[in-house]
Image (cartoon, rainbow, N blue to C red):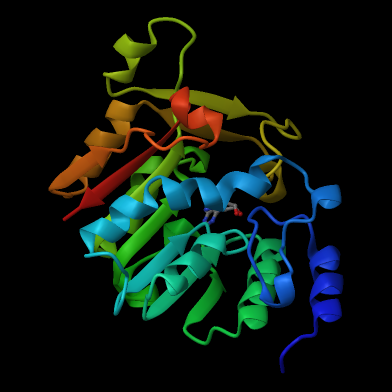
Length: 257
Ligand SMILES: C[S@@+](CC[C@H](N)C(=O)[O-])C[C@H]1O[C@@H](n2cnc3c(N)ncnc32)[C@H](O)[C@@H]1O
């Protein structure tokens, strides 16, 4: 049953803060300024809609019509919603935090999409016989969180028929950045028990862990190793993206079979 504007607003406040600003019916938005945690919540989806997304759509002649799309580490599902809007036949968003999946499910219900599904699945468990194959895989904001990034990316690659769009934090040294950027290197951070390195990470991490931030070259080499024939770093050309993209602390890559 369609939710009224008041019901939507109440539910948004119950579930806030959302990591993605998503437009819902009756002019309601999941971004509630007085409940937001971080500025990025307002800009996240919009940034990638102007950077990375146009190149992905161009690879498919302007739309995702008729395609199966997997949104890995979907959080509250802002990119899954964009894939539906771009014409995808079916979109699956996966994440391991129930709070995010509850938010995603609320958004799905509010928008009344029946070809969108959210499931609690770990990247490590992605395989053709658990989730099937996907024409497009969105790998946003997860590579640098993985303790075993090569294995995780292999799992994603094994279910990718054609294209993967990757958006990741990058290793950005203080000195010699151009020299480092052009080499295949990873920076390892050991995160101790109870240590906070990012708010979102601490929602699913228990105990200590290792995280690896790649250079641009390392992401390109890894995607090549996974069998993608055409792999490119997408330079930030649009104005008004999140500033971390211009500083090359964050990067977006398109890999096509
Ligand atoms: C930084 S957020 C990125 C969210 C979204 N993809 C984006 O780019 O805005 C990282 C997400 O990865 C999810 N996550 C972390 N480890 C995961 C794993 N092993 N499998 C699936 N999701 C995971 C977290 O719950 C969180 O929603």
